[in-house]
Length: 241
Image 1 (cartoon, rainbow, N blue to C red):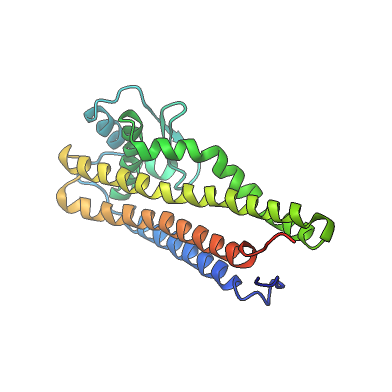
Image 2: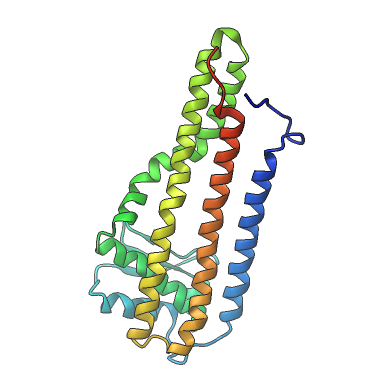
């Protein structure tokens, strides 16, 4: 069994550092890419909100509202009330970056309307994934503490295994998110050109923005996997006394 280490002596902590660096790099990439193409105005002059409306109408979706929300890059689709929520930097902007982000969120609305299986699976995983991300590590820590007490070693073992299992659901959620996000971008790119929202040349800029955004999900999934691997390396081999 691998022993327990202090924060600064645990060799597996490098996995956490790698995950954090991946996430920081991905976030920096999406911000710089978005800011770059936020300055490139679309030839059609359509705002993000207008592009979203056209995409939804062409998809035959008329029961989804497009609403502005506060913040920067806080764009999202809410299936509970069927709203495409566009941030201030997207809703009224005529840039190719804003159009791409708006249409990507409409891609999620189309997934919802078409009963896209990975989206349904991700939605079903939300409660257990939230619990796993919040309670998984505390359960493992509590189990490790109790595991050091001979009278409660078995309980400690059970808590550790439960914590790892719950954290697995959080990782699974991250993995299921990948095809959902990739598919939403694919739907957006196809309709952006076919509906005349952007020209073929402009769509190349938009694709760069959406690709950079996709990297943030890849980095988050990788970081979660590395964290899970670390937990298994430290605690997974622990056995009941």
